[in-house]
Amino acid sequence: MVDTHPVSSGAEPLRWDPLVVLDDPYPTYRRLRDEAPLYHDEERDFWAFTRYDDVQTAARDWATYSSGAEGGNDLDNGAELFQPAGDLAGVDPPTHERIRAVLHPAFKPTLVKARFEPVVREAVIRLIDQFADRDSADFARELARPLPAEIVCSWLGFPTEDHPYLIDLFGKMLTRDRGQPALPATALAARDDMHAYVRSAAAERRKAPRDDLLSLMVAAQRGQHISDDEVLGISVLLFMAGITTTQGLISNSLFHLDRFPDQQALLRREPDRMAFAIEELLRFEAPLQTLARTTTRDVEAYDTVIPQGSRVGLVWASANRDERRWDEPDRLDITREPSRHVAFGEGIHHCIGAPLARLEARVAFEELFKRIPDYAVIGPTVRGSTPSDRLFESLPVEF
Figure 1 (cartoon, rainbow, N blue to C red):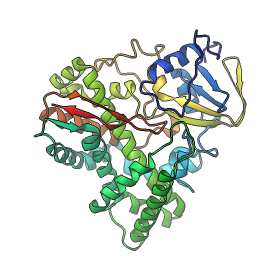
Figure 2 (figure 1 turned 90 degrees about the horizontal axis):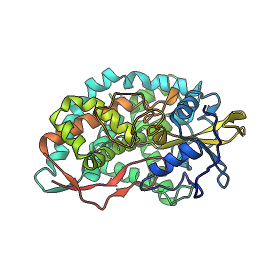
Figure 3 (figure 1 turned 45 degrees about the vertical axis):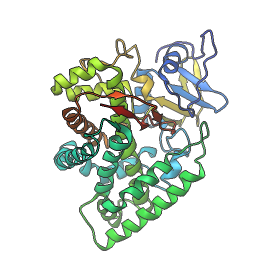
């Protein structure tokens, strides 16, 4: 880690509240990297790394920066959505290895592509059909959310007729009170309804297994590889993360391709650049901005000691804009030479669903750009309210 003073030296006091969603957090992230690469919020007793090397190093050192401590890895009390067990992102080895081993065979990139590319393309075309003949749409509400919601619900084995109900629960579980760590009553009630739904669906799979993820987990539970509570927690985590990450990737990308029309035009002219473009879009705007860890020992960094038991934020989105790693990081450039980013995390907790998110985004852009020659964001746009997720709830456009 670079030896520099951890305290802000700017003319104006540097204050960052990790629980408050900012319309544009990147100027703040830049100040944090430059002035306080190890940031400490005394009021919340919260630390944060914002430079790429620091974030990557900490993310790979799960033994020191634990995801399994009480409170999980969300900035707020979001871990309560997945309790009492099964939050793959919020546990360390050996529990993490045991749960991931159950899911890994289903999430192999080659298998994901073979199973889902035709399904995703059919869903994308059907969704675009619903608005292509109009002169306007809401890309968040009509594409970015319903696409991953349909895919993950179907993969878990939830019937099509239940999808509207489940998407409504999903939206309610994302509600937050600005700046507050506690989940509001709306989110907790939706969680309870979701838990009841999953437990009922799992009971059905025990009687009659199917070709879906829930049946895979029920079989693992029968084989004593995971517990009944873990079936519940894993299912809710896959449901939530399977939607938020892809919704963020698609909606953020469509927003920024409008802001950088030269890049959109280049991608339309040269669609073979799509894979590299998606990596640059992920770098530019990480769907998951920050996750927290808890130190298992005292850690020395930047002439400071982070005490054992401290909450430490790993700010993925800031790391991906670090000038120490990328030239002109605030410029979207789909011709940029690819370099490893941390938009999907790092280390053992790297997002297991990343291949599916990339696939859904690629197919969505391929089909959308075939059907709609050009579009413009007309607003007003609405951002999500959870402190970790970066996505649009509403992205009105005209074409």
